[in-house]
Structures are given as structure tokens and as C-alpha cells.
Length: 231
Ligand code: APR
Image (cartoon, rainbow, N blue to C red; front, side, top):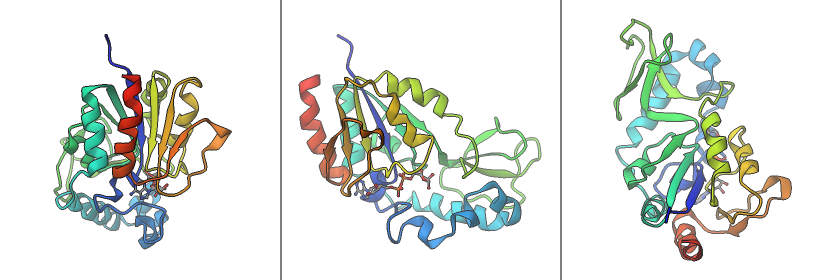
């Protein structure tokens, strides 16, 4: 009997309990930086060293953080479900927890790519890159991150994935940023849908989500109990 498919859309809140600040809460990452100053192609054009340093700091932070109960619960659910994770996060905590199928919509901190040949992508772990670090063809390296205003190529794979879900979970995202937030529209109407978030998240289009108003850790344990009926 094939396992039922649990599709997960995760956001910064997934990693909050691991100590990685979210984006839009008070004290969130962007509050300390103006988005325009660090996460746009224009910023990289204008002040590449600042942008490279911003991502070097976030990459380095990966050495100090661990997957939390939420990441580990999703990894454990792979025993009973075909778990497919679509994440807006650029950290590697879903991987570290043992999840196998992960689609990074907004790129990955541990990867850099050529500014001239985007197919040249390098895994650098938590190392820093600086001005003058070049790809094999001599072009400057940049974070393999989707900046504001850039396209989200992975969305083309994410849409059919959400549509293929037997169970759909949204966890730790304020659903503020498109096209990621628009993915919820592609879940089939009749399947069970859950949303885990300690705060109240405005679910657009009045979609029928079971809300678990808890943090990722506690909320995912509650979800685990609730979805055993669908095994
Ligand atoms: N557990 C679960 N969710 C939490 C927790 C927690 N412990 N703490 C906070 N949250 C929730 C917040 O209530 C909020 O709804 O996580 C969500 C975080 O929302 P954002 O900070 O907007 O992060 P996200 O939705 O991932 O942002 C989307 O915006 O800046 C861009 O590219 C960046 O991927 C990011 C995208």
C-alpha cells in the first residue's frame, strides 16, 4: 500500500525554536536590516561586500543551531507518510533533522553560484565568500538565494507537488510573500489541511485549514497525533 503524501510548506517560524530569527516579527531579521540594503540584486550591485557579509553571518550561524522538535517530527513522519517538504527557509535544518525530500523555494545558505553562469552552483557549507571569489569560469560568486524581485524557479515544481498532496501542512509562515503564499490555493479542496503557528495567520481565500495555534515543536506533535487516522 503506497504511503499517503504529506506535503509541507514551511517558513521562518519552523526554525524559530532553533534560534534563527524570523523575518517579520519584532526583532526579526529584516528589522535589523533594511531589506533593500541586503536582499536585492540592486543591493548586491551597489554594495556587494555588505550583501556578502550579511549572508556570511547567516551561513556561519548554521554552525550554532540544531533542528528543533518540529524539524525532527516531520523527519519522523517519513516512516508513515511520503513527506514532501517545500520550504521558504534557506537554512539546512530540515536536512539535518533527516528529511529526505526538500524543495528550497528561496535557495540555500550553504550554496553559492556564479553571477554569470547560474548553473554553476557550489556547496560551501558554512564557509564565507568574499569579493574576488570566482566560479570556474572566472565570474564573481554570489549567494544561491532568491532575492526580492528575482524569479522563483522552484515554484514550477512546487505547484504540482502541492496539488498531489493527500494531506497539506503549512507551518511557520506568515503567508506574506508570493509566489510561495499562493501555493495554498493548489491543495485539493477535499483533503485535510493544517496550519501550525503560535500567532494568528490570515489564511487567504477562506480556505478550510485546521488551525493548531502552537509553536512548531508542540504543534507538530499535536499534528502527528491528528494525522495518524489517515495512515
Ligand atoms: N513556531 C512556528 N511558527 C512561528 C514560531 C514558532 N515558534 N514563531 C513565530 N512563528 C510564525 C510567525 O507567527 C509568522 O507567522 O512564523 C511566521 C514567520 O513569518 P515570516 O517572518 O514572515 O517568515 P516567512 O513567512 O518565512 O517569510 C517568507 O519572506 O523575507 C522573505 O525570503 C524570505 O522566505 C522568507 C519569506
